[in-house]
Amino acid sequence: MFGYLEGFSENEEILYCSHCASPISIRYNDGTVLCEKCGLHFGMIEIAAASLVESIMSDEEGDVFE
Ligand SMILES: [Zn+2]
Image 1 (spheres, rainbow, N blue to C red):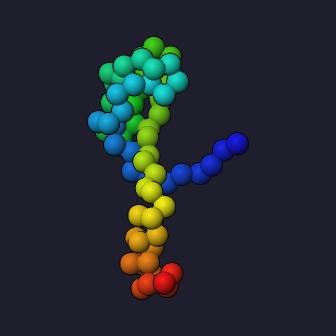
Image 2: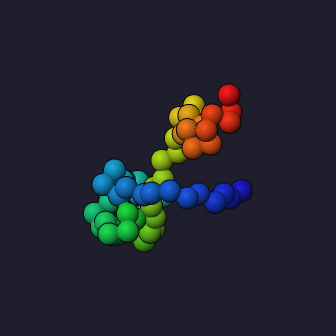
């Protein structure tokens, strides 16, 4: 299973590797991080709650969803 995600990655909030759980020490300017232990290079995108997305969408679309 896979999915395509688009968004902003904030690497100051990534404290541990999502694969091996080691503390993250290398942070890149593009919002991604590198795990020194297992070599995983990744970023993290937070997914907004459905209700928040709905309110953003309705703002952009001029209350189409009401
Ligand atoms: Zn790791």
